[in-house]
Image 1 (cartoon, rainbow, N blue to C red):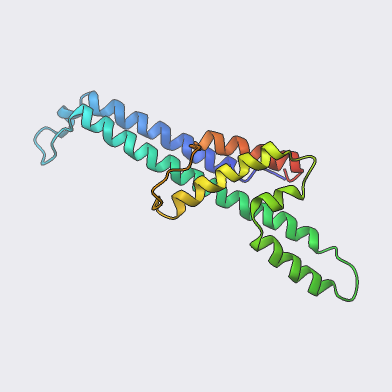
Image 2: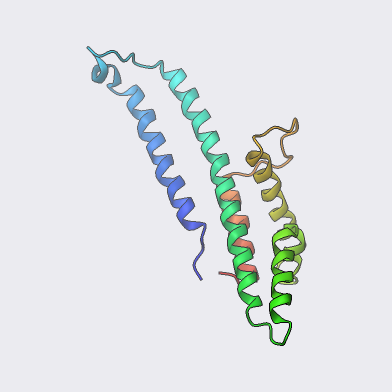
Length: 168
């Protein structure tokens, strides 16, 4: 099965390139391009500040998207394994297990894949989830998570988990 996070990482790479093009344009001939129009050329320092802010916001949203895609993929993988439950109560068992998968913390789901998935991998997975929750809930808590999670770190952690667990 292919890695569902690759398309998100590729979108980030394209956007990063676009940020760099915009940054270069802000300093190269931009003033000439807007001469005679209602637009004012931005101060290069201010343009860099805006670019860094936008990049930071995008990075957080990319981590959020990767974590959400990972969780959906992980739950779909586990639920697909339930379809093989034999017996008269198979439908009830499948429904109950599906509810368990949906409501269980990632550390509990991760433990299902032990020993292929190590406690360190589960701890890393929890760090991504904590950061994702902080972003998803509007960064409203007064404390930023103790571990910053960049898109490349999230990709590495989540892909490593899926590979170790045999999901991809």
